[in-house]
Image (cartoon, rainbow, N blue to C red; front, side):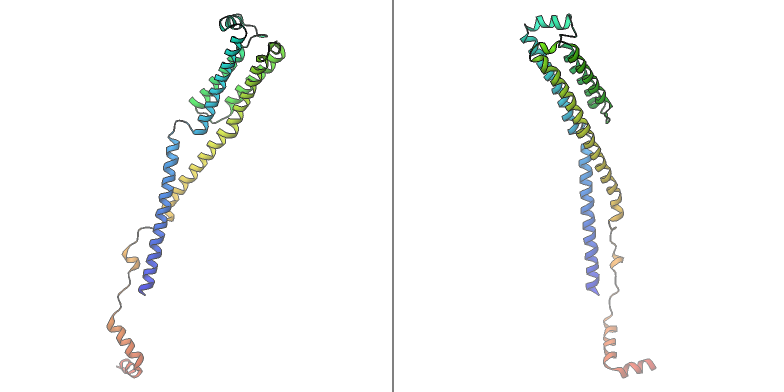
Length: 231
């Protein structure tokens, strides 16, 4: 009898330990996700914003190199900016990079949008502008930069679109779903874990030594047992 009670108590204590371990693990995971939620921006979104910044700086660098190669920065700035010509100037490609940088940083770093409409607008505007400029302008006759700047600008715009649509938004949606599932499991954990043990759950009345001795005597002396029943 005592062994059965002790085994039952051990099993319940084991269940309590397992439940406490599971709840502790859930609490640790919730705290880690809470810390991630408290960040100003997620890691994958920060990587996207860094790439947008790289796009802007790279196009700016290429444009400055083009100005310096074709006769000096001061002279080319006067030619391309003050006397802007759509068919021969690279200044509009630089402005296109500024437009991409401004709208994407404002939408996905400042406002923290979780939709693709902002990058869809920026990519559509950039692609349409570059295609029309390559068709109507004389950039292809101005050397290597006439090829490099439009092509690199076009490719970078589509890389940004791919990063947001296939990396940033799906990863953030997956993290949010995982966080919600952990929160649901945390709310269900107190219902699944056993409650505190009470002494009454394992109480068994002590056996009487005198009663046990009498029962043994009755078994060995059946006549005595019959006499007691008759009396």
